[in-house]
Amino acid sequence: MAPYQFIERPTPFNTKGGSTLPIFAVTPAHIETGTIDPIALDWARKAGYKAESGSLLLIPTAEGHLGGALYGLGTNPSEQPYITGRLARALPAGEWHIETAPLTANRLALGFGLGSYRFDRYKSEKSPAATLMIPRDADGADIKRQLAGVFLARDLINTPTNDMGPDQLEAAFRALAGHYKAEISVITGDELLKQNFPLVHTVGRASADAPRLLELRWGKKGHRKVTLVGKGVCFDTGGLDIKPAASMLLMKKDMGGAANVMGLALMIMDAKLKVDLRVIVPVVENAISSNAFRPGDIYRSRKGLTVQIDNTDAEGRLILADALAYADEEEPELLIDMATLTGAARVALGPDLPPFFTDDANLAHELTEASLETDDPIWRLPLHAGYEKDIRTKFADLTNAPAGGMAGSITAALFLKRFVSKAKSWVHFDIYGWAPSERPHSPGGGEAQAIRALFHHIRGSLR
Image (tube, rainbow, N blue to C red; front, side, top):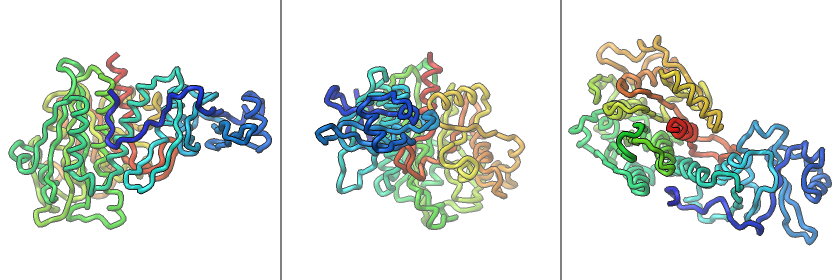
């Protein structure tokens, strides 16, 4: 069974064998020492080709037809492990294979696949693309699985809210569950109040699309219990504390946490990992209406803790609070939440390096190792107990928006921690979910972050 696709697209890989054109991936040293194909070398030297990182030189045949390509890796290819992603967008359409490359087969093919991504759902014209043969010593099934998870996250984030509101996100969630024969349940609208999800209802009640809680179960009881929670704010106006217009431009990505846990769940289910998987996604639109929640309101959470609303634009932690408390009730061995939560995280680490928070030192070490092994960057930030005072308030147990603006990512994580007490290990990822500019392995736009590292960790923990 092929991995689930939200948007059907052709594979970036081919299987045509001898009919494919060769690519010589080279460093400047290969040109200087002449350790490549003589015809390619002669053409490179005549063209003054220096094999700079990401540079492409097409090679003609003696008859003037396209015969192959030289692709530059720069002097230190390890600095850009997925440099072949740019190759996917630079090559002319056709079938290609790598003839030589000082890269591992898996990195080479995965990089090409990641870079091949296109979001052309709304384009009238779609151009053909180059395809690459997966090297024989690469794990083709695993590469395709990881690409499917990454592409799912990217597709969901890139889709504008008029086509990715709460109803449509639920439909995508159901389709993913159906593909892998997972069980699914949905709690919608006022039923959230009856089943004790008051904060999810509070944040989403002003929208024309009802708030809801999505839940997926897959796997076998008795296996390692892994629970994923993702923030699903399909659009965030900021509520009554409305955002300025410029700050709303990317708010279709505020369901990036949901998109990423769905991508991770895809990888886990597609690989048939021996886990007892549970995925929980609270889904809302933070809209403005006569019944929108207000600054100064105080609400009781599922866990019983009361929360004072000091800013309606700090809504993500509210819906996560109910979802985490619900997830925690079953005492999972590993509880992971992902959310596009704070601007403070981006100020601290930029858009490409998502911070994570956990008080489990062993888990933190293992996740860091997984990050390095997969070149999927993450960075641990502290759950500094000294800032606990900042999330307290005079009239309620907690505030959703501490005053002062200091350590915003940490105080948000400390807020969420108050709703987790039974899970053996918990980790929170404050992701951006967006690539502001093109990179070798991404054309820019919606982005999967940390899920390849998390998949690698979960799979490795079962061996």
